[in-house]
Length: 263
Image 1 (cartoon, rainbow, N blue to C red):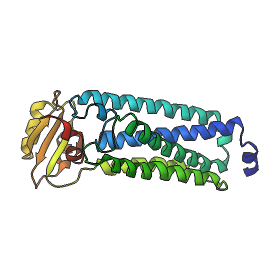
Image 2 (image 1 turned 60 degrees about the horizontal axis):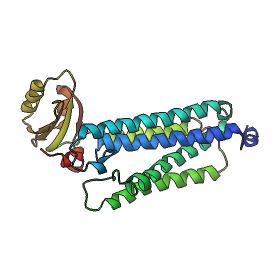
Image 3 (image 1 turned 30 degrees about the vertical axis):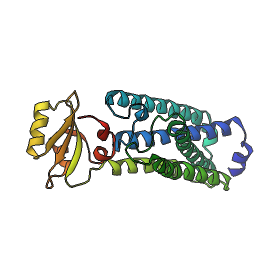
Image 4 (image 1 turned 60 degrees about the vertical axis):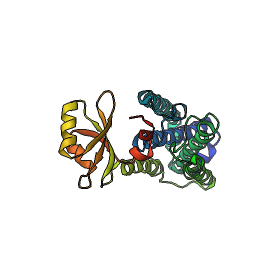
């Protein structure tokens, strides 16, 4: 099986497999960035550098959605390339190659994003609300750009090993999901909290929930679906989930885009 795979190296199937893995890793890098930084932590949006006051938050959210749609297109291209290389992919020794290529794409996304979006076009920075954003840019670039890229290059040079076809890509996807889940869990304690209620929760009911938890209203958007409140010390942010909330977060208020919204 190893000999068969080696014999096909450089063939169209090998190229499709490699570029398919890179495209999937690239799209995972974009999803990781968009979901964690744009939506969960809200350290920036795609075009935060063009609207640093955060006055048009709906436009910023829309551009984030277009960015994710583009990542879906890249992922679809990667899956199509892997489907074309399905006979080659069936080789048991190709699992680590696929994982290596995914790491190359994942790291490549963050390197391109840093040099193009952060430092050339100035569309956004990793943290928009800090005195020295380049420090955060460099830390993020090293952790999620340079290290995965070097790991992918090293893994590509290693002799192929069997039985990684499913487990290696699954490990990368699992890491993304676990990181997002941990970041989405609101921490206990008092302080500002952002709450998004279900569509069936009326503004009057939302106000009643806020009053029940003895919270102080800080801000709401025009649709009255998203509310920023100040919790008392004895209240836990997760209490909103039992009152009809879809999304609750503490981390995005002091450190993210809310600081740039004019109340």
